Every structure is written in C-alpha cells, then in structure tokens.
Amino acid sequence: MPTIEIVSVGASRLSLNQSNFELALIEENKLKSHRGLFYDWLNGQEGVIVHLGNPKFKEDKTGGFFAGELIDWSFEPTTIELPNFGKVETGANQISGFRFLTNYQIEVALILEKAITASPELKVYFLTDIQFGAGNGKMEELNLKEFWTMHDTEGLKWNTLYKLGK
Image 1: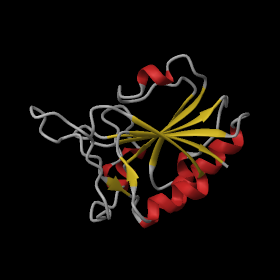
Image 2 (image 1 turned 180 degrees about the vertical axis):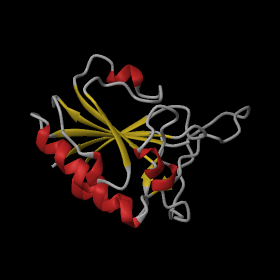
Image 3 (image 1 turned 180 degrees about the horizontal axis):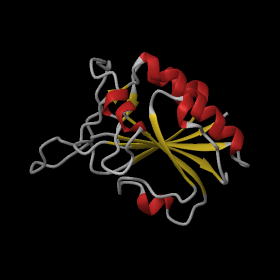
Image 4 (image 1 turned 90 degrees about the vertical axis):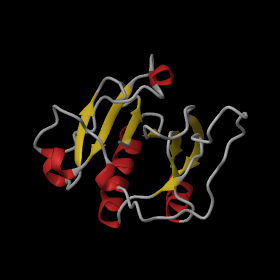
C-alpha cells in the first residue's frame, strides 16, 4: 500500500483542519514516517509531518493508513526507470511514475503551499513509499513548479523523497 507524506522542515505546526479536506490526514510534530524507507534520513531533523490517506480514514486513523485511493492508477508514464541490477535480481527495482486523481491534486497543492509557508527555511520534503517499489530510496530536488510539471507529464516516482522549495 502506498504511503505519501509531506514534511514542513523546521515548522512547529501547520494547523490543518481535517474538515477542510476530502483526503484523510494526520499531522504530527515528530518526524516519523509510517514506513521505514527514509527513517534514517529523517531521524534527527525537526519539523511537522503530514501523512496523507484515503478518505475513508478521516474517521478512523488508528489502523492502517495509506493513500492508494488518492492515486490515478490508470496513469501510464511515458518512461519507466530501470536501475542497473545483477543477474540474480528480478527487476523489481523498476521505478514507475504515478499521479494523483484530479480531485485530490488541489488539496495536495494546498497542503504543500501551507507546509512551505510554515517552514522557516521555506523547504518541504515530499515522501513516497510503496511496498513493491525500488528497495533503495531516491532523492530529488525540485521547485514546486518543476514538481507539478513532473507530476502532470512523466509522473512522480515511488520510493522517492523530493526536496521542494518555492
């Protein structure tokens, strides 16, 4: 199941109101991802993390919390990245692109804008993690315009931490 999280670097709170969003969200001031891929990288940093989830999790945030219903699974990226792998590997490390369903794009954009504004460094991390994606996390630095252009054209990559600025 996919995990999508947004970190406002150095912020103390975003004060997001769940009733203003169709997607579910959990806001925490301790940077702990729901998945372990970027745990070591986040460890020791400060800020606020927002976990994005399926709308059905708005009322119950105690069990599993993932974002599969926010994704346009019919999107087919123009390219799929195939990292170098040895003979014994299966190729499961391919990195495919994804994008959000249209009705959630505005909400994600609002959360990103609020997160950047709340960050004293004007910096946000956008984390993606999917169970059967690449085993090693990847990092990429973009501004918001580049991020949304990538989203709309080739798609965002799973198991990637995007460092975003204005």
